[in-house]
Amino acid sequence: MRRDIFQAIADPTRRAIIALIAVQAMTPNAIAAHFDTTRQAVSKHLKILTECELVQPRQEGREIYYQLEIAKMKEIDKWLEQFRKIWEDRFSQLDSLLLTLKQQNK
Amino acid sequence: MRRDIFQAIADPTRRAIIALIAVQAMTPNAIAAHFDTTRQAVSKHLKILTECELVQPRQEGREIYYQLEIAKMKEIDKWLEQFRKIWEDRFSQLDSLLLTLKQQNK
DNA sequence: TATAAATGCAACTTTTCGGTTTCGCAAAAT
DNA sequence: ATTTTGCGAAACCGAAAAGTTGCATTTATA
Image 1: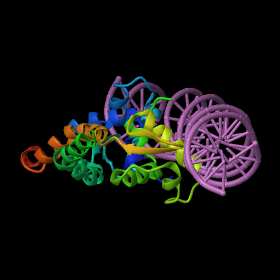
Image 2: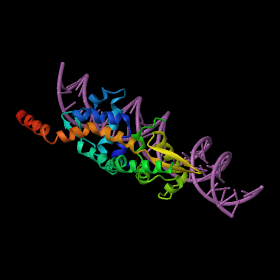
Image 3: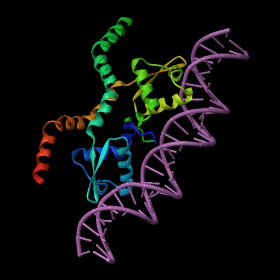
């Protein structure tokens, strides 16, 4: 039951759900209508997304609107940060350095 | 056997491997030494990472150096792009707009 | 008040995943 | 030439995940 955000976005259906409710909050039924699965399956995905706080339910009468907690998405961005540094560096200095070395070896 | 990059980074060990070889290419044995698992387990992770082209093997004698394909990481960044737009907008215009609408409905 | 709609929850099944063990092969070392 | 080292692949196992089905609960509506 170790839910983290990386596991949450591993499933393609969940990514689609995230993209869908990013625009506006939606109910499980409304979400399920967009996919080829049952409402219960969507409900399970929503539960997982809720558990890792990527999504927040908001009750409204007998309906429950699920809203994307957009701030949580930054965690992924934060993880990417360490690599962004590399891929920016690598294409400027390092690559030209390696190229020089390679040509010297010929 | 449907491997994509999101599934690849779902596992915490694989994320650690990625971070490890981001600095420099390493052999399976060298990688395994950093973790509490067997070489074979690491080998399995490397296979998955290779399948989705996040990592590239480079044979050198009887050793195989696994190198991070840093460019592939951009795919995650690319997916985040759609949300980055939202989380930048939402805190400026949209939120205040919705707040106004909500108060008018009362 | 009786019924329909919207939902969550629990039980069950099938599939996938991560790990270990065992094996075989090729390269290096002795 | 024999042994050691580095590696991948296959078989197997337990745990977790994903989906389905059925049921209970709450809120609208006729």
